[in-house]
Amino acid sequence: MARWHMCFSKHFQDFSAAPGTSFRDAARDAPDGWIQVADDIRVTDVGQRYARALFELAEEAKATAAVERDLLALKAMAADSKDLRVLLASPSFSAEDKAAGLAGIAAKAKFHAITRKFLGLLSANRRADALVQVIDCFRKISAEQRGVVSAEIVTALPLSAAQAKGVASALRAALGKDPEISTRVDPALLGGIKVRVGSRLFDASLKSKLDSLKFALKRA
Image (tube, rainbow, N blue to C red; front, side, top):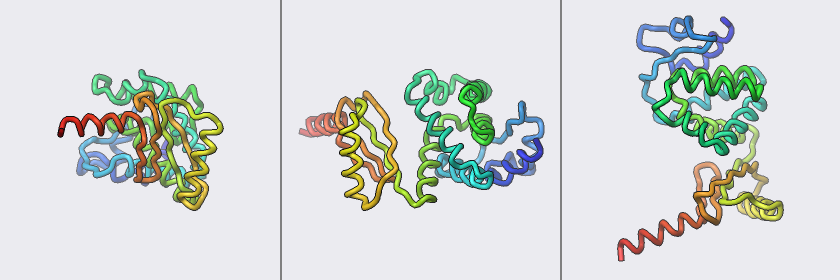
């Protein structure tokens, strides 16, 4: 257990407890080894900072690929489960409730120890609502480290094999390299497609077009 405390204190030192309290002191009495951290620090980009710290820890442990697989699996679960999305986002659930829920999922899915530990940290610090943001940032950092471009494709309905191949071909031509593609279904789009590459977003969804039309009509 001491080794875990040392590793996490090194990589998450910016998420320490109140002034005058060391990270180790804050973590000493954590239930089931979870690290207790205060939620009183100000961060400009929660997802980026947590993802960077997690990536560095996973890289040192030579577990980057395993942790990334866990995170992507967890993101897919959140996309498929309304209950999980509510658990993460709702302030009605305590930090302990969120920690217990994520711990159960991690155990059942046999996530890597670093992933399980991190989910406990995120919950204890009352940042579980930022989990998807953390995952997206982690994936971006990992892709950059490997010299590839990551792209997320969101559609109202699952893409057929031919459609997926066509989108990949178009992205390859536009980017000049093979992108690492992840897909997600969001019925709220109604139709069309959204493609995010880094901070760039191409939105050709039907919902976006309808929203633009509504705005134009209001101004008419």
